[in-house]
Structure formats: C-alpha cells, structure tokens
Image (cartoon, rainbow, N blue to C red; front, side):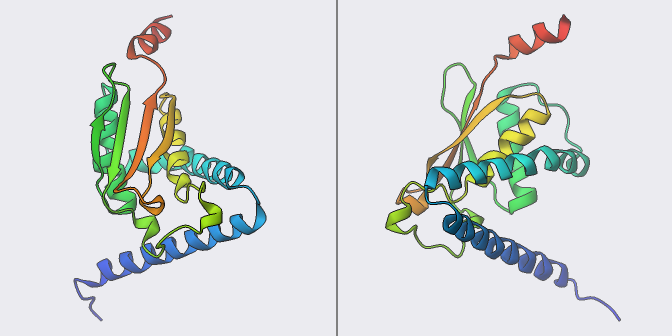
Length: 181
C-alpha cells in the first residue's frame, strides 16, 4: 500500500484545524468560567507560558538554530522559524525603539482566529490569542531572555493587522557583565 505524496500535507492541515477549533473551545470555556476578561487573559498567558517553557526544547532540537547574537536576530528567529514551524505563518518584524530592544511581530493572517469573525461586545477587552504572548515569553525566559510580550493590535478588535509587541527587558551589556562575574 503506497501513500500519495499530498497525504502528509492533508494530515497537517487537519491537525491544524483541530488545534484551532480546540483552542476556540478552550477560550469559550474560560469565558464561561471567568466573568472578567482580565482573568481569562491572565489564564491564557499562564497557560502559554507553561507551553513556551517546554516548547523551546523542541524548537531548539528540531530547528538546529545557532545562538542569536542580538535582540534583532532573536525577533527574526521567532518570526521566520518558530512561527513558521508551529503555526505555518511568517510574521513581519519591525524594530520600534532606538535602543533596539522593542520589536513588533505583525501577522497579516493569524491562524488561531480562522474560525472567529469577531469578539462579542461584552468581551471587548478579551485578548483571544493571549496564549501566544505567554508562549513567546516562556520560551525566551528559558534561553535567559526576560521579555514583556503583549498584543498591540488585534484584527478581532477591528485593527488592520494583528501585532504582538516584544520588549526585551535587559540590555545586552547587562547579560555580559552578569556572565563574567
């Protein structure tokens, strides 16, 4: 019995759709369990953080990437390799600070919202994809990079794009001095 060459892609697409639908069911259940959007957002962030601290091992093993030498390289690695590997999309990266420690990942298409058209009016402050912020933050902390990760824009809230902001909290010089002590 032989497999057709296109079969693997079909399985990947089905598992992605299943993930997106399951994620939607999770967010819907959290909205039922918690009255405040802030509580749901915090729970999604904590859940994402837990995923991120474990996912980084898989990422490093599967991607065989070299150590990033700058925050810019790190942001590019997140966008071009990690997002492509796990979500099948490649966000664009822009640096939003003169210090070079603030970056934006701009998603033209967010796969987690494939089956979501808009948020209900009573859930206006819900960050539906806040899990992604937690995943990025957790993964970065495991490679000794403290960061603040937040949604800056969200298509589900009427913005033109989905934008995730990453602010690295330490200067590269601070890390070098601590390592030499």
